[in-house]
Length: 423
Image (tube, rainbow, N blue to C red; front, side, top):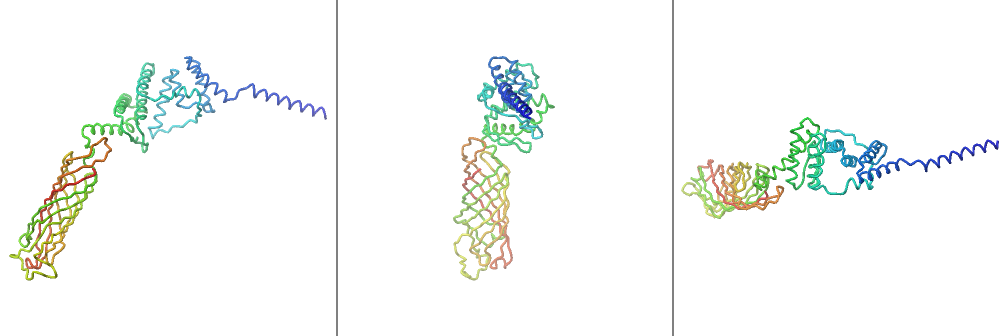
């Protein structure tokens, strides 16, 4: 029995000694991965590209098992070693994953570490124009496919442009830009992207460049070019609101002109405009036109009736609203015909007071000052001189005139106004 126990203890000691020796003699996977990264760094610094390639291949083969190597480090290392074809393919695939909503890419589980290799590959340098030109020249001098050369230059210029801009978001297959446009880098990228789409229309990268990236960016470039020529061009036929003060004169026509005297007192009018694209909603309030009975035509038997002074000099007032449509808009001139309804309150009539009217007319605006524009997104304050014409069509029923029967009343109003608009 004692012999058996002694033999079992010997086996346990032997196993423990073996495990202890193994722990110190065999490096762990983490140590092997770290050694590979150190070896690649040392080889890259010494220009030993073959040894650097071996270390990179080892890390790529074991990336799924936890070897620390990000995809960014991988394509940068490919470029360092001279594997431009592999580097461009991965670089382009990462961009397609970002820009092409129809592309479903399995995201690899890559481990990231910050060490001397990551610092060396990433460099910490900003992507300036000098670096972009240098990288393009380096790839151009390689023997990779012409398609991949152009694709790399296109996407590199896209990255350079993006770093000088702000990308808002991607949604519904539309790439949305929101930035103060770096016009020169945007146009350079557009030139390369259009060349790639034209030369390689069947490439998987041509579709998202053509449909997702180029159109919105081209629209912004065109908008900025137009802004340089005419800073207000993008504001024409757009919305805004304004306030106007007018003086006016007018006269009455129709049958009412036979029974009423219509005079201009001290007329003034103010109005508010609210505009969405070409359509506007306008409201106004007007004072200052005086109407009297024409005693040669009207049988006014009493000069006072229920406290109404038929000889008084009170001024009538009118309120109304209309809907307008901008038919012409430019830097200095806007033409806006309108239709609507108004009501005039006749202060001097015995029986008729508030008279509903159908109206139509037009505004002609002369913008004599607009606030300076520094970008196409700025709001514009504009001061305008407005010529306004209104024709009001109504009918009166006044017992003192026309034997108490209705008669037509047509009023013409000409206004001159000064207004301010947020345009």
